[in-house]
Image (cartoon, rainbow, N blue to C red; front, side, top):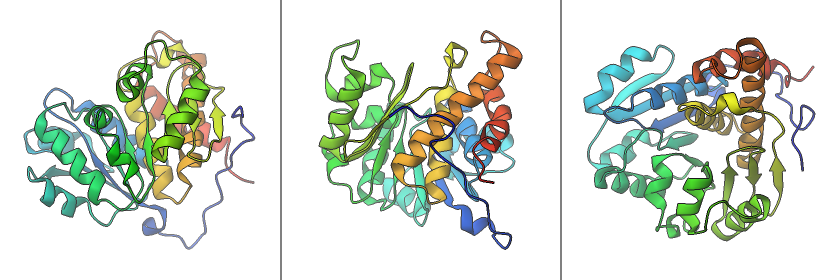
Length: 277
């Protein structure tokens, strides 16, 4: 089905609610040279309504990330995968991968987290690279995993050729086979659920084709997951909001000049359009 402004609604918040009611999310991301990715993801998670956002980054970049994070809590990630799992335990949803790098240590940490975290997980960027060739990790999980590949990453995951033939059917088949929600990014992004349902997005524009836009989307998805939306609804709604924010930016700033940071600034206006009366 095509996603539009009437597909989803953001419910009114209860007057007596507190931050614990809106999700505790954990992010494992970042590496030397890629400190912007965890920051953009964390800011997006906060902006999309998450109650508590923790950002676990390598010790070598922790001070840089911490200086950029006011609303999210940045912490040095233990080098030991077992200790990292304990640090990230107790969350409602987790995001793994933005700017993480492709070293053996990062791959081992991703594998351990997928085996031990018993909550929905969003896999993005280098989190996706870490499971290429290890799709059994997805099959064995007790909780749903949301994967957010662009076409190149999807081709590496499933071994198909580029361009991806029949994006909707390819996404549907992968989601069914691996019990995951697949967000196949690109023009008219496709979100596929394990039960065969597919959503095709109708928002977005070429001005969003910049490094960092995907980090914003990943942070939005994990925030909605943490607030209790279903995995498929979290993904499809975040994709629509992300594209709508991009369209608002393009109208105001133009497609050439808009940035991922501008997407964050436009998110409140996009979200207001989905708030229930």
